Length: 521
Image (cartoon, rainbow, N blue to C red):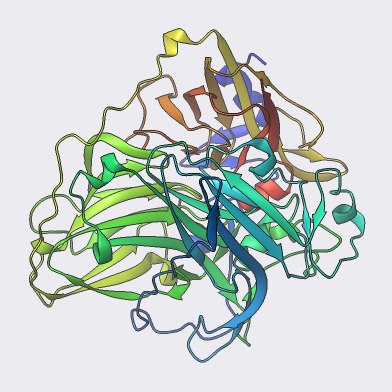
């Protein structure tokens, strides 16, 4: 495909006037949802809880069940559970080990792990290690279903998704972990039903460590804090509210028409708690920020800002450490992106309350969480001027250039979301890629689309023909692409041969066919 930007805008019917819109597309970022969103706000029918009254939970670290052949072994059971998310209410969740978020897996670079997932849910599942350099058979191809132990009756759309490596009860995922230290996460990836199943709770952290990272003297231990940020809406009885066409997730895919641009909730959760509070020392903290929302983008900033120095010092991106720290007053985070940052609470007097706010939210979604500086403390952490020797992929080395347009389009007889005008077909390979070669991929968009590429990370080399943006540094596996924009990335697949995916990580877009498969050889 060869298409100029002018030709692309004409093809999609996009107009730009104080923002972006598409003729005939209802509510692309409703005013109630706040600015900077391609999605619609779903409000809760219960009274929203008070903010900053619940302590920030830290997800449980999963312990290995043993080891074999040089690999650590883990056992995770996917099951239903009732959790108190909103104080005073029980919320039924789909949880890895019955928790939300799921347990955190800690791994070391070069030490393989194997994770056995057992499905005791009422629906099929697929597990994807997001950011993992993973063999195809363990990557979570969306039709490689894991059926429940007790069996399940699928109909309609769901019955058509049985064309992959379908198993019942349990599946073992093998992860070589031959990759840089980084903040990864695992989540459901079932074809056509990812959005409602992640919304119900199927997500957890997977952190990779290595000697280089540990030798930098960065904040560690209790001052290394993972923050899974997501939004949800609740029914009056405390259940999650979600506008699925088929709440059983056993027959019909998709959301109600008003929400096909994406679903936003009015409650911000961090590690599964609404607007939590964390007591901190007057010291540096490492915050591993993950946007695990279905569709919401965040513009995060500290209020009040520190009286000296930046609000955030970014030390890592999706795929690992940056070459050197980058200072930010605020950070824009699209769905599935990770930002590894250091915040120095030693710049605030003891007794200060520091609120993490969201400038892309309004009303209840303008706040995320609060930090309370409660004590002085010794701080022996460091923030080196150089973090790592970051390999640079040279665009001049690329012999292959590919272009991918992300836009609304027909999916069968219905409106949906397409790549290069095509709805996803798990049996169709849209690119054949040679392992070890650098390629340049150009992503065009009509609206906001966070584009995620499986298997290997990439490097952003430009936006709209200019330089990369302020949040594009380092190894990325997900890139935030704004309306009527194109982004060029350099990518090199080097690890594994097989079928892999590229898709929009607005999960409603993904479920409505905005995925593309490619094969590495």
